[in-house]
Length: 176
Image (cartoon, rainbow, N blue to C red; front, side):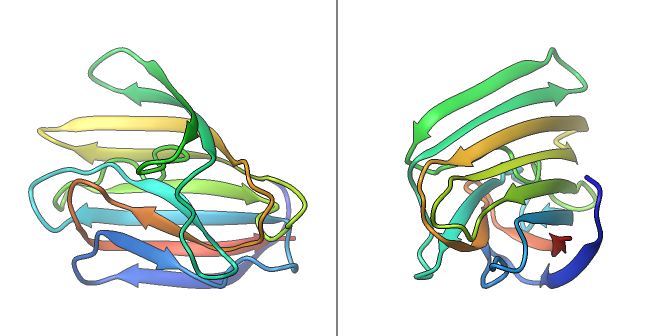
């Protein structure tokens, strides 16, 4: 993705959390955002998936109307496609930041978010992640997703459903 990056926010996890909310980072100033996560590890020995959800301008986490598709590429087994339409439970656009596990096993990603602040278009994303976890397992995935709502999005949440994370960094950039 060409363009200049302008730092908007850096969020660092230093305590045990099941969700990491990054609020008030999307605005009318940019149409495209880049999110880079790094160093995510769990507070316990249980690995967890990580899901991306959006936060609307009222401050509510959106938990419905997502479609996503990912190519799941573990190093130790065959590749597979994961696709879901109109997911509304523990919604995941795709595996946002890999599968964090207890340090030194970590996960990270690069995501691009398109038109989140616009209330007249859907919010799209694309991204890729990598992680190292569970005796050891190396994993990458690439994915795309869409929130099928025309609502103004001002932030995002990384959700960790199986185990809290105790470290990691999220950096949000606007792309000019």
